[in-house]
Length: 384
Image 1 (spheres, helix red, strand yellow):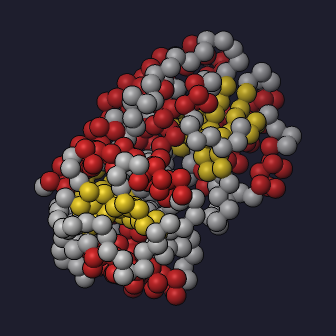
Image 2 (cartoon, helix red, strand yellow):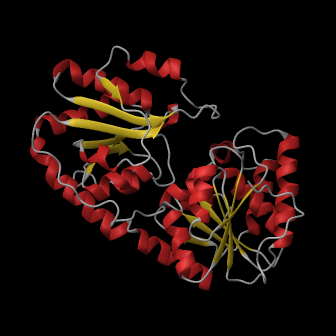
Image 3 (cartoon, rainbow, N blue to C red):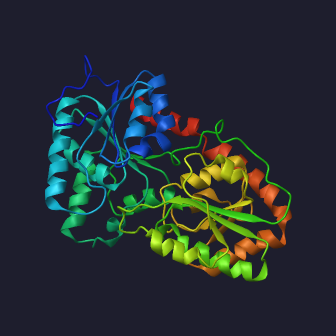
């Protein structure tokens, strides 16, 4: 596996604006969330190079290389704030940027965005695009008069454009002056491939079944979902509740396997494990639930919408953009399991709502979240 050491030569005869470098913090996200975007770049004649830190990168890199993408490892710690590790990342990015002068760079997730934006300040020939896939919690904690806030404002000047996946994040950046004139572009998430995620009518056979798909993190609302399931099952014992997900052991917000299985041991919630392809799981359930605390744009909700499932999700940035209240689902307050339970019971008491709300979800996905529409916006930014 190739690891970037700053001395390698990228396999490019000439570096021109038709080259795009993508900085990620987790290799599987390049194929799961950015795969359609990367394919669109290649179809439009761009040479694509992807960078990711070590960890679960082998399969993703193999898939990317099969379509002509160059892949490299670089130094990045996904979590933590170690000064030496961060300095190593910045030096590594500076070496990368020096080699790809006069190219586009797209970064996403907190650390690649902040570090990529910072290094771009010193490379005016780099066109850096920051993709905001979820608001870093640290930005909410910064004082209006803090040095850190000033630094973030200056760092964000390194971006030619800032791509926002939802309206709330865009508004937050504008209100806090992290945006500069002409930087902002709304792209409505990563989009969903409507050919891959085809409409599939829900079963009309009772009982009603609920599904959550997520990394097993506290901030995804896992505890609230389990509590809601326990509340509902006391009255409606035939209803079923499932979780598909994976343990993120390197994340400080991660739920340990011991704690998770303890939580569901005496509940009606069934853990279905980790699935690389979730389409068949969604088809086998009536309603999709994601009680997340915040999102850029929740991918699993878009997948469920495309397949034709009504949605229960939280009234928080990113999530609220996916629901037209009472049309394709219901919004609930963050952290309130009782509200989730009440929404679940509305579907159990009125199962005739499921099919028309699922159809509304599909129509909403076609109208706003088609991956082709999202990629068209990003390509327009590159050509502007």
